[in-house]
Amino acid sequence: MTPSSTAQSPADILFQPFRLKTLELKNRIVMAPMTRNFSPNGIPDGAVADYYTRRAAADVGLILSEGTTIARPAAKNLPQIPSFHGAALDGWKRVIDAVHGAGGKMGPQIWHVGSVPGPGTDWTPDGAPESPSGLVAPGAARGVAMSDEDIADTIAAFGAAARAAKTLGFDTFELHGAHGYLIDQFFWDGTNRRDDRWGGATLAQRSRFAAEVVKAARAAVGPDFPIILRLSQWKQQDYDVKLAADPDAMTQWLLPLVEAGADVLHCSQRRFWEAEFPEIDGEQGLNFAGWAKKLTGAATISVGSVGLDGEFLSAFAGKGAAVAHLDGLLARMERGEFDLIAVGRALLADPQWAAKVKAGDQAGLTAFEPKALATLS
Image (tube, rainbow, N blue to C red):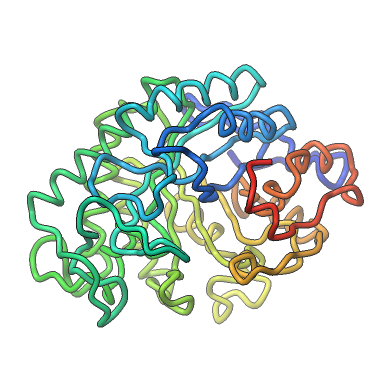
């Protein structure tokens, strides 16, 4: 799974194949999950299918969908976020068939938002927001604390969504365990104040819920279907949070999740080029995905403002971003620091991003502007 060093041109490293279990990708470029909120009544339609198919037809190796929610009453926080259960599955079948028809590979991102409200809206779901301790941030109450029955039903719902992904013909799926949403709220001591088996003083103890979700997903799809788990140190509630302060803590956090059945760790950071533990290996040291791969042996995806001159959070402030050179990314991939690279806003702004990079046309890449968020282009 480690890239070779036989690339003949600067970007060739991105276009080497990748294989893991039943997943075979033509290159190392992943379309990162990006919430779009364009699925009427939670059901993806033809416009959604076309949106993904355009990227599949333009050399993206693996598409990870926007977050799609499990069958829990308060799993979403915006009305047109797509579901991944019930009537929505027919829509997703249309999507994956179209993506396959264009020569692409795809997995849904399976999600529960926990107690996080939707941005810029007062819309509320049918049920009360649920989370480990009824907190959206340290000391900030929102919604209800989950009962043992709620937790069991939620784990089962993740498993059911995993099974549906395989049944529909997707090539993989991703469990969203990052960015301060439900699974991540169990990791974080600021939002998990439980004193039962789902809480605890250590990160390893608070990872039990995530491990059980992964185990349920693995049981649903069998041993050979690849499972991706997205993780982050930072939270949207607090960008400076760091769950694992050092490699030992990171090992105690991540290794049990790999042992539970996660094949690929999708390591989200705000800027992929930043060292995770610079006090150990310097400012140019391994990033989050690099350390995760080193410590667990799992394949990893890196992500964070790829191809742009500003971090992705600026998009939420209505700011654009110019195209940035890929030299630093290519160097990290050449040395095998991580296996795959996820591209977000750059691919949202330019569906032809991967094809242009492959052709050596970085000068022709379209810069990101906030207007790209307003349509499914």
